[in-house]
Amino acid sequence: MTDREQYIPGPASGAQVRKDGEKWTLILVRELRHPPEKVWEALTDPAHLREWAPFEADGSLGTVGKVKLTWVGTPTPLETMVTRADAPRMLEYNDTRWELEASGGGTRLTLWHNIDRRFISWGAAGWHICFDVLDRLLSGNPISRIVGADAMKFEGWQRLNAEYAKQFGVETPNWLPKAARQS
Image (cartoon, rainbow, N blue to C red):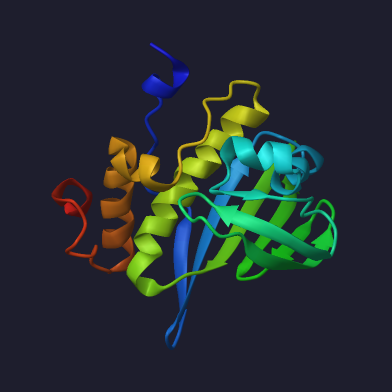
């Protein structure tokens, strides 16, 4: 059995939602055992992003300027403006902000992601798995990314989606497969 087949995400944790009218922001915090410089490289280098993130970039996210992101499952790249790139502490582009803080020999990684409230639990479940894959990649035990439709078929995503939906007080859309709506 491969490491990916043995992978089971832990319980929903480290997430919160901020609401400002119709605008919802998902905030996910993860403690990683790796220094901020190593995490920064994984957040900004296109080769690293292809291993764990739900998108690919046509250039580095580590400098202010335009880059095209292609989200898994979408055919058209999205022109993106990196508005802040303070290595290895802060990265901002479009509706996403990453904060990296040195913490006990590792990094406290915080993601702020504006997301439609209908998909807030989806986003939390997806990013949770991405963070797990990122941590394994940085530890030298890559399992390849689990994103998009592949993630939604993954039993761990379905459980996380239900757990986060309950935690945030939102319902999972009724057009989801039954397994993804169970709480």
